[in-house]
Amino acid sequence: MIHDKIALPINGSTANLTTYVMENSQEMDVSWRRPAMIICPGGGYEMTSDREAEPIAIKMMSFGYQVFVLRYSVQPATYPTALIQLAASVALVRKNSEKWFVNPEKIIVAGFSAGGHLAAHLGVAWQTEVIADYLEGPRESWRPNALLLSYPVISSGSFGHQDSFKNLLGENYQQAAADFSLENLVTNKTPPTFIWHTGEDGLVPAENSLLFTAALRKVQVPVELHLFTKGGHGLSLAVKETATGLPLYGIEKTVAVWPELFAKWFEELFESEQS
Picture 1 (tube, one colour):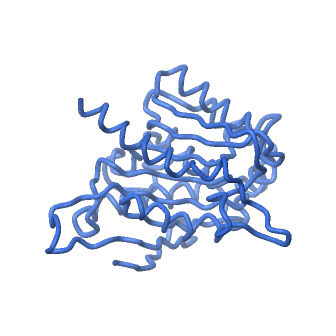
Picture 2: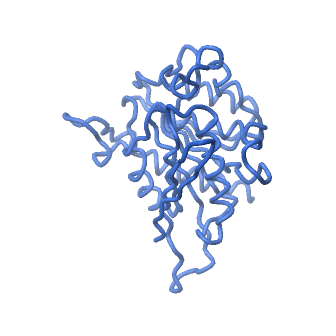
Picture 3: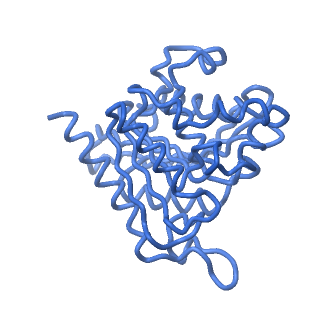
């Protein structure tokens, strides 16, 4: 396995991209190129959570993905630093697709909570000037082929997690927050998206996912939404391994199926595109 930490200095701040890359064996198919997933942990743009980093990477490796965990810059770094870091990460994985045994047309960006806002932001803004002003090369080089959004921060309106936007925007929060409500930025160039949320989420209400889903449907972008009845915010894998605190928080058996649901959706997505 190729397990490295790569520094990404962007806009005066440095992100770290950790690789979880399986090497091809001479005993098997040496030409195999796997889908890749870049994971953006949550943390309200204040930190990046360990619970939504390596445990997710290991789980996704079990489905055959090459995985990369992005520890993007958080406050006091502000927009567009993290967005540029994520775009640069996608471009880096695509550029090194042969080295890392990656199918360059199957790159997933996954985000949790505020990391979901970051992932979705790249999904709606990959073709815009704000990224092209910082990075070289064609804009398609940093375009995700699919999004995985887990209890994402989406809206800066009445359902918004305002602390995330305050950390993202700093002193520009008051005048700029409305511009970062991602349900209003969806176009038909937004990648196909898998979203899951819980109805009991009291920190980032499920309306965030519902608004983004409705926007995707309006422009006919493929989307699958799973709204689970039980469970609060930040469940990660929803199993004991990623539970936290005493008593343990974050174990929800009915929610723990989401990785398998995503993997099946992603497989069928590309089967339908190739048919």
